[in-house]
Length: 259
Image 1 (cartoon, rainbow, N blue to C red):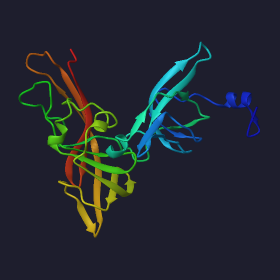
Image 2: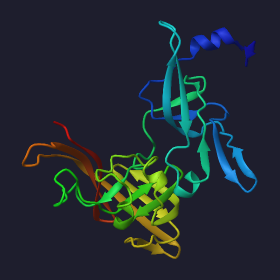
Image 3: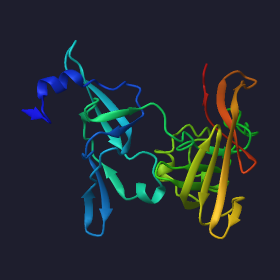
């Protein structure tokens, strides 16, 4: 059978599996990924268009050596809260190759999906030697929304270290506020994000009527080790420092119980 003038055998020769460490891809054709969206008449299949950005959920290697083949499942990624509440997934494995997908080395705006927390880095809780304190946070989603989380809202997540990524812990946590981004630009290590309505409890920069801006500057990476007195729970953390409208924020992860 011909595929646009190329036989299936020729197409298979040219197609290559994508790297196993792939996080994001863009579709090379229209497809479905096992995602359905809740509507007034029930759940309807989401039809994915060509060149759509998707997040890789899992990868499965099938076959026998040396003819292994990779298959993968996908999600819409770290989209805004209201959207995540309407979408459900069933596992649908799709051939994970260059015929179907384009490998994305890095997001055009890597600030997206990072959990930006208030402060200059992890601070240990005085009552818990192996846990840092909570702080408010902000996330820029893949579908161009800003979501903020108050300190009180963050305590609803049962993980002081906040190692969970935006698409699992935050998918279940309702933001304190959400606004749609009207424009996002990146210049060097600085992001300028414009939106039309002010964020609740956030120091917006108002540029004009229905025009607000969030400026994010990347400062650099820090590493810190914590070792309690009894040496029972060795802990380690690393993070990158930012400023959001000149106020300190950071993004990173930590581990404890390293002994």
